[in-house]
Image (cartoon, rainbow, N blue to C red):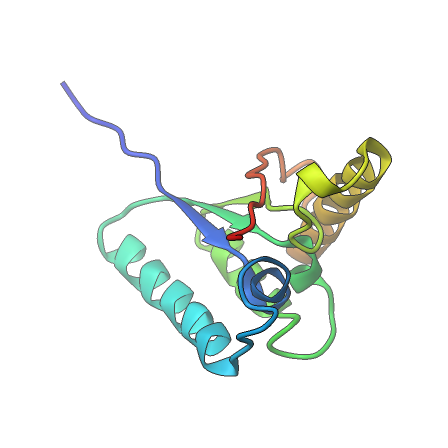
Length: 133
């Protein structure tokens, strides 16, 4: 009997970290560490022939200013065969926003992520953001 393991990486990125856990403790160090950790995890996943799901904040997929935007890393994740799932547009904490705002966040995230990887209908998963409060 073979076993299956599902691993999901919660890829908050800079904006997600600011919006969830760090508004008063902002540190570029933690943001750069997450980027480095994703590269390390991708190397280990390749070594183990393992595929994962990366729940990505859609904002990071847009062209813009690094480290707040990092579309190259999103494309790298996808090109290595991992699933890209939405983690909202900018890590909004859904209990505090209305239904229309949630809908817009999900639509914008899906659009940005799919545009970034260049494949329509490739983002089907969603991992809801939470806030450490």
